[in-house]
Image (cartoon, rainbow, N blue to C red; front, top):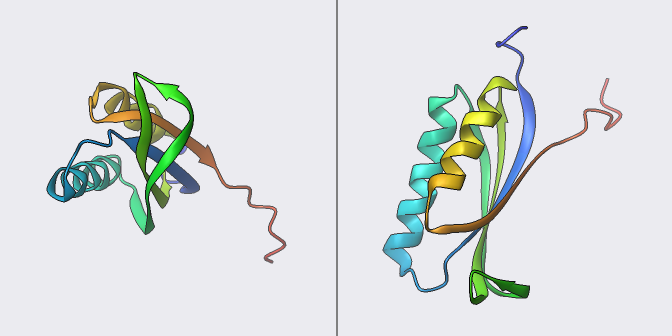
Length: 105
């Protein structure tokens, strides 16, 4: 397996709504460091802000949404998922690989 191959991924996660701005920035910084520790890099970050959830998650009705576009070797995704699961401030997350079939040649 070639660990040097970098794939493009999107990471979307929802942070508990009761955190203040410092807490949210702290979670974002920890996620950026976790990505870097897996030989990845964050390409862009979009903070979507607080939004109503479609259904309650852990008794929360709203959450703070953040999107990271990143590049990372496939081997780092499993560890990043483990870190996200252990973070009590993150109530839900999704990592998916972007398709390379965008027509670029």
